[in-house]
Amino acid sequence: MRDILVLKSVTNTSDGEGGYVPTIAVVKSIFAKVEPLKESRVLDANQLEYTQAYRIYIRYDAAINNTNLLNYKGKDLTIHSAIDISGLNQFIEVIAYTNE
Image (cartoon, rainbow, N blue to C red; front, side, top):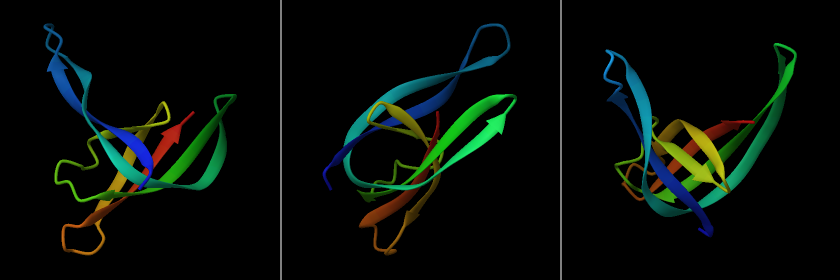
């Protein structure tokens, strides 16, 4: 596990006018193994949108779920799934993606 990711927490904070604003806070840095998966391109509203998916292996951490964000090499990744692959609380396999 040689890659470094930054785990971010997203919470909704009241804006004082009856609405909420998402607030992002850095939780911690973690070591991981990151494998890029298939990249796709979509033309949406006359704009080309790139999506890159990643398979990420990290040591077990109960704080990681699909409401968090991961930052990898300056890109924020949205967590699609986080699964305890062995069932023994040793490693988590995360599938995450970014839109560029």
